[in-house]
Length: 294
Image (cartoon, rainbow, N blue to C red; front, side):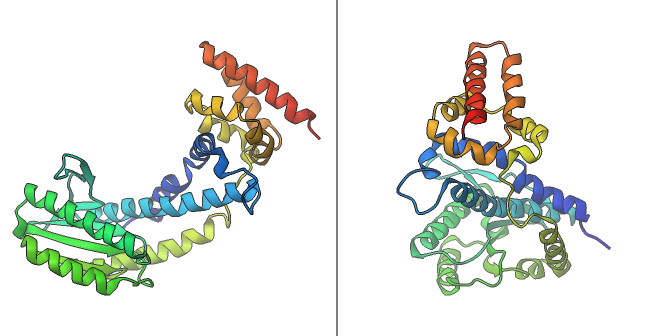
């Protein structure tokens, strides 16, 4: 008996991690080309592009896990509450998980693993306290349960520090309970260890299905790549096309057969505004140069 269907599980991960990989990559190259090319780096452009995609996928994995955990809480009948709170300085804060269960409020600050240095861990605790403060302005403190939660149970570098700080915060704010939990402990706490068992089972299966490394070649599926990137802000294309080093070093990696670029060129040609006419001309010249380059 499944709690969540496997197809739904993988859909959440794949959409969160991979769906915007291509447009996001072009946006990053456009804004920070020197992070990908340049003399004072021990790596060539292809390695930097791969490194960027891998790092991006790691970050998005954490975001996808937030969506997965929330979906499980929703499935078992929890009422999902607004994640956005106004901070003490008027700034907006976003809680990773916030829901109503058994007549009480549960809020979770969720991280992938407890392996950060001293500066990062202090910042995380301050952030947790700020969110707790804002939450008890909205809900009765004696109804609030807070969790500082790390998904990966194998990393507990700062456990003693977090326990001590969470204990201090609980005494000061008078909330019902604050907890530091790792891995399965969150789901054991709410009486649903079967959720964690399913997550582990699904994750192991999903990891066997995904590519070992991200695909850098947009031309492997040019029509799909074109559909994913055609609606990027024209300023991104203008910056890319005007950077000769990007065109020379990165475009052959992403567009080796120029197939995606040709779809893009036709799209620009079909648009009526001046910016697209200029992009069409620039891209036409680039394609010709790439075709004629040795």
